[in-house]
Length: 307
Image 1: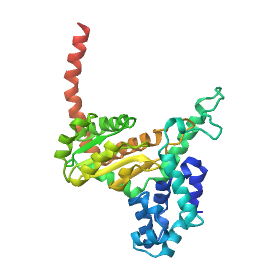
Image 2: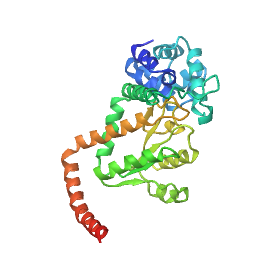
Image 3: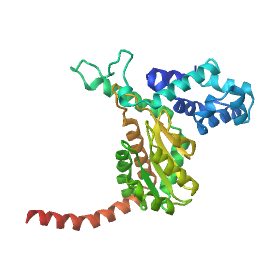
Image 4: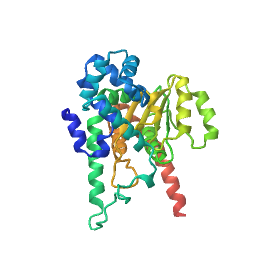
């Protein structure tokens, strides 16, 4: 097992069973041929990993021994162990909150309420550590470059729980740059949004277990129009990962029946900070002009409130 794999394992069982994060964290350790295997596993998740060795080798255009070497560098003794871990991950990916209990049938929330915050805080810290190790630098920089191009309109959307993350990111981006839009929650309005999408548009989507088919269908249509898709998902990978141009699989494990979004939130704030740093002069000028517009509006509202 590689040093990075050992670090992943040290961060907890739920995090260690994170195939997408694991593969991405090992890309730099693979040869060019082995990297073809890894990319095939990511681009055709999860079906490629459920094929036979010969089947995966054919899809990746490599030999069977190359598949075995790649799997071993990912930290598995053999291909059977790799497939067993993948199947276990797939089962976890479709769990409902009520199913996230330990073998004794109890929730993983500690019963000792003298320090109720400590176990949760420790889990969140581990998630942030794992996210720090797994986010690919090239992928991160590519998204920063995309968002720095103000000629590219941005559209953000999330699901039942992740809509709040999409809106949080939207409020920041809307200050930093023009042409930032939030996709309405009403699906009846989506055709109008999709119809106007094109090759310069960036669709930023948030989708975690249990993944939403309506968001998948939206992204399929956006992809047909040539839009760039940036996906924020969990370690089990949304089905949208098969078509996304950039994927950030964030660890979500927590001592609770509910997944944690802390690692995703930290990544979003990091992106905002880097964007601000990269385009500091332009953004500073934009914020100054926004404040100049905000001041008379604020004064007028304050005056009405005091009447």
